[in-house]
Amino acid sequence: MSRVAPPAEPRGAAPRDVAPLPAGPGPAGRRRTRRRREALAGLAFVAPMLVLFAVFRFGPTAGAALLSLTDYRLSGEWDFIGAANYTRLLQDGLFWRSLGVTAVYTALYVPMTVLLALATAVLLHRTLWLRGFFRGLFFLPYVTSVVLAAVIWKWIYEVEDGLLNAALGALGSGTVDFLGDESLVLPSIAAAAAWKGFGYSMLILLAGLQSIPREVAEAATIDGASSWQRFRWVTLPLLRPVLFFVLVIEAIQSFQVFDAMYVMTAGGPVRASYSLVYFLYDSGFKFFDFGYASAVGLVLFLVVLVFSLIQRRLIGREED
Image (cartoon, rainbow, N blue to C red; front, side):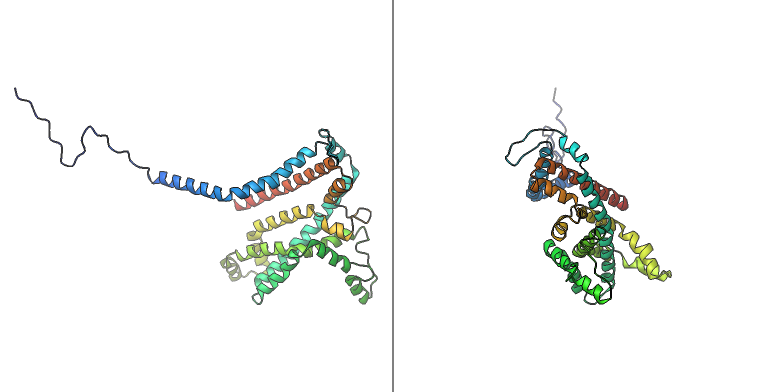
């Protein structure tokens, strides 16, 4: 009996006993792999800065938090006392006074600085002639030393030889002790600080104004809106995220005020310009109560953190 031959395999076909090669990753898999490689490359580039940030930012903050739970002394000896420094802080009238001074200063400085920065940014946005020159001129005080600016304004506020009192005398008015009057010292320091620091916020607001599409303002003009109506109902709503950012940044800056008060008034008169950071400085470097000063610093850190969270929430809501 003859055997039946198996059917011939088509020419060019792979043998039946050889498994087919596995298919390569699809387009989605290749995209995921590429994104993973790009993420790892970006992380490798920023890793040194992240390490420096962790060492020089989080490290001191964690060290201050631990130090605030001790009564660390200049000799290096210390004892763990728990939350005793915070209990003492809540009962310290000078702490509450310095916190109140800082809050009043913030309430004066922030509107003054933001309004000045916004007005200057709007003028520069509308000015085409020598815009770069005026932008650099207005930004110049920001890069000036804080101590130098404080010395200049202290001379301007002088009772006898000050420039401001000389101008008031020329107008027939009497002299005013701007830095010696309890009711005038904080507005005077806030005005000097606003002159010093408004340039940074001005540049941010100017960038925000330049990012607004011109077509929106042109459409409002065609509809018959005046300059004030365009600014109120078109520019300000579109500028709101940038404005919130500037407000929070300036508020954080104002809570850390120290240099101007130290140079111009040394905390006087009668501690009317005694800020929270000044209280921290005296506690740590005048009375060498480092644990107590660390507790003050941690409270200040929490205040700044709260403002940062408010900024994140408000800006995120506007973007949504």
